[in-house]
Image 1 (cartoon, rainbow, N blue to C red):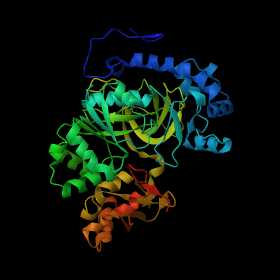
Image 2: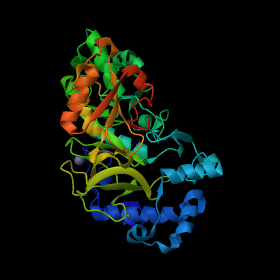
Image 3: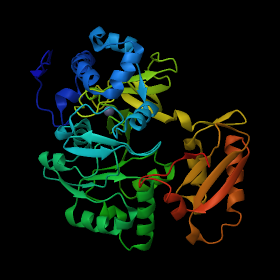
Image 4: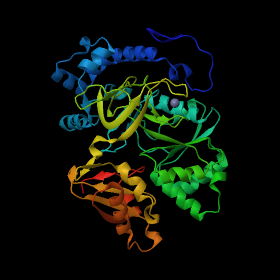
Length: 444
Ligand SMILES: [Zn+2]
């Protein structure tokens, strides 16, 4: 069977475990062949049409004609990052930051980046985009099948929130709603009525909303969610308490993250790492000098979009600290698994001790008033003498007197660094973020 010119695979038997069995289980040597084929087709086109890529490659003295293999690419291709995209955007009055390669007349849809590390950037997109392919594979894996209803409560992301025709084309009927805890009662009604099989997607604010809802409602969450075969949680790592809560509601949670802004990436049923789809993105795990680190070691995720006809990221340094495992997964998929350790810029040194947001989450959620684990590290500079936290609390739980001291004591006991806590009602803190989360590190 021919996947694309030059790349052939053996005919396979029908396998209902996968949405796209041949691609999802493609042997690694074939996967690399496919990556190389797609990359070499993309590079001249991107160089010709992307203002940023031409500028960066010219400055590095590299031309696509010098690149004839994956090995050439990782040896020679220069990097871009978010700062380069923003600088190009501002210098050239180009909303897409110089990465758009399609003419405006060829762009059917514009989505936005999630805005985690700054203002969201508009991203041109269209039918058959990488995120569409990725989401269909994930929904199938969770257990969704053509004919099913699924919930689609999407926040801003590269693929956009309004484009759902691909779900209909695949046979799903999406129940769409904004990613807004205020409309959870309506969503619960819709779940009871239509009995969707996939719950996409939950986040910290949505879990807070559902917890509050079920505490006041006579409804049994296990009954509400009985048709759900899997619930996808994204935006940030799910806190251990919310994970246990979701389990008590009968939900199997599938953690979800970004694969370097090219697509999303979800855990499989093994719940041991996110699958990064390597037919859609070439992924590298690199040290600070741009050298590849071995599987299992921590490096920065660097991605190249392989199928994006509208605005491909070409050797994009994501700032995400990750670990890779490229051995086949017990689920049968051959595409790499990765683990996220945080964002490079989020690390704070307190008297020389490294502190990341994930170190604090499990401590804060242990106090009843701060069980939602809404907090920020206040960090004017990367090195601090005292860890400063802004922590959201539930104003309905009564007097917060003593809470700050309890939090300070428990953080200091666990992390062995001095700590100061500023308390803010949860509702105020939630206003600081995009719908699915709040910034975990802030300058003030
Ligand atoms: Zn797997």
